[in-house]
Image (cartoon, rainbow, N blue to C red; front, side, top):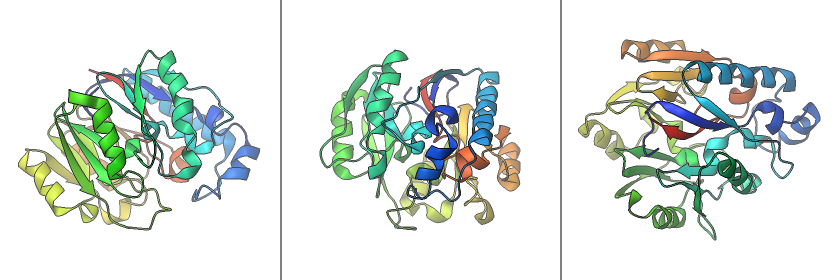
Length: 287
């Protein structure tokens, strides 16, 4: 599991039916959670079904999280709640306060899926899964921003032990402030061991250079497709990717780099909550 691009064998997800529950729940929560629009419940459920069908057709077995009244509609974005290593999972402590109950709810699903829990981030520490990517098996790149802090990284390293040999800390910009959804994976999506999709205008220079020095080629997301989550792309296998519809230039650039691209309609489950396919999935086992 200590990579981001191997063939996904098993993946944890939460269906819109169980995260959103009903239209009344959506109506009560979406504005307070800073969604860009009000999701439509029946359409969201259809989109969850379609995304699952695409993943299953690409060889992924889906483990579904059940409905849980202790969490809100953001719980559809399962990646943020845990970091998964070869030894097991570390439960995160969310930087977004409204999401704090989610990791505990996820623990039940991890246990049912046979993934051991190594521990959890606590105290003043904060880590969100979208702020971390595995590189080269025992190396991680992790953000320093509004959702992940130095104390959280310290605890994470202690829980992972010698499973991680090196940590590269990537400072994030203020961008739109602490209320915005900005993660490390907001501007980088690994596509293969030697290929990543990036939005360079947001990247620290040292990190961009560091990736290229390691032989990783970069595919650039154009400005006009950043806000539509052109940079949020899930590698299902090396050079096999799933992305949100509506980003034709990014898709064309990926295909020119030899990537097989599959798209889904995420108007309700992705665009309005600013969570693309990487956010909607927590891979548990990769080949």
